[in-house]
Length: 407
Ligand code: DWN
Image 1 (cartoon, rainbow, N blue to C red):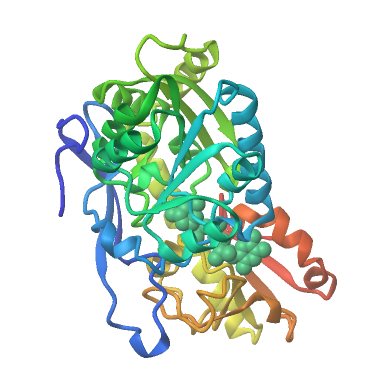
Image 2 (cartoon, rainbow, N blue to C red):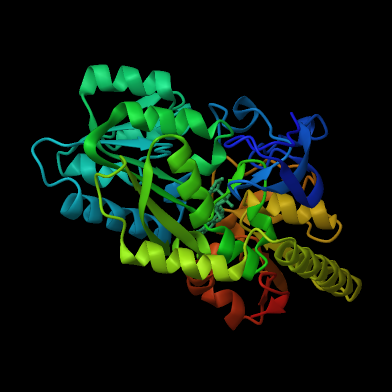
């Protein structure tokens, strides 16, 4: 359903970017089913009231977060390390009282909660994806299959008591009905508890032209000012923010009940910096659009020249982000004949919309292509480091944010 008023505050939304007709980014069809996919118009706008950047036409959650949702957070060593640190940080700061409860919204394969489970901390993951939940359960993580909202929060509170911490990494921005998350948090949080949100940061996306961070699941692109406004709208208060390296640039937002925590000096400083960047202004989005059009032209130009010159090219990482890049730029098997990925659930399938075959990343060297287009640029250090033999054998990586370049 296309909106022209803000889902949060009801003010007018000013359209600012249209990335065209796009498929469900994590629906990897079997080759025989390619062509029968769901598409939608990927366009975002800025709320003229609370400044929340949001998609205009949002797919229902049932199209995106199916029981066989293929993404697994634990695939990356970098992410495993990050979430182990999160668990440690929570233990040292928020979970010091008697028998605290942690609830994670979108616990995926238990990458964060497994550390807390091992430490004997009371926890519950809430996730609609059955396969990911089964993996988490094998690691001793308690999972409730389903969506987190006001109703499920009330059930959890009745059964388990209030939560000291509600945590959501890369999930809260995925929920069109943001109010359902915040109302649920209001129901479930202990009086002195915190809702910790980790998500991509609009400032980083705009500054580095990370246009592929815009896809179906990212209904909202969070900024400090807009998250502060949303928390206020739903009866909570943003009290701290902290930049994170996760996924190549993100932000942690700490939210509490009003008046329960003193907002930090860091929050005030970062909010002032953000205001100086003018994130909600039309000029910033005009620059972003010009930047992404240059990337699209340069990338297609490079791939076309390489293929015309007889070079072999493969993609690396069948990311959700790559759906936006390939479908916006029109990159199909003619330019990139296959994509390597380590996720068994994606192998043997084809990419959404452009139908590039996905092959086990263990076969990357059989033989190496001349060039590898790194769709998983957010894991560049990890992947380029592990696949160092590729470069040693003469191969070159193609990266496309913040501009098209070879490494
Ligand atoms: O917000 C979201 C983020 C957290 O995860 C979701 N909406 C969906 C997903 O986005 P993504 O698919 O763009 O995430 P990644 O982490 O960039 O995906 C990396 C892909 O690359 C995975 O399919 C796994 C693959 N991979 C690989 O083949 N070898 C990853 C690594 C690290 C590797 O070494």
